[in-house]
Image (cartoon, rainbow, N blue to C red; front, side, top):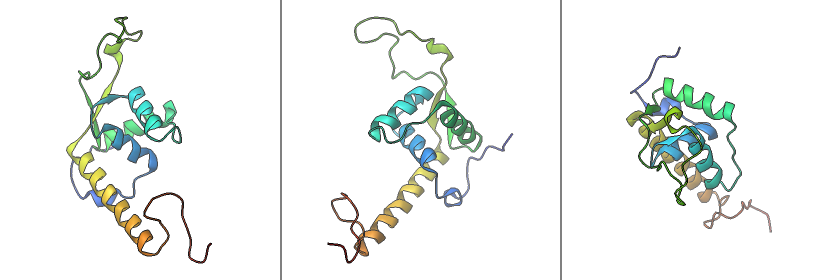
Length: 141
């Protein structure tokens, strides 16, 4: 299998694919299990990005192997019961939880800085309106 990477220059991994970027964003604020990552990405993107199981778990495996994310003990953020007191219908002990590594956080930060530079350049060229709504091109009405 691939050698785990825990350091080095994050810039060497850029640009990130949209899938990797969204998985790292989902893990930036809390540890999540795979299904929870998919739900967070779908909700945050308004349904525009849906990660199927093969894409999600294949990407997570490669990201673990690359040192961007790590498997962690079950998260304390999800209760064993639903708000109405009913027990959860899944076996929580079988779920794998993932968290961002320090290296993964540095890679995410480098990618966000790179994207910020791209947006700044587009705005300077008049291609990206300050509101962020739609794209206008020079010469368009």
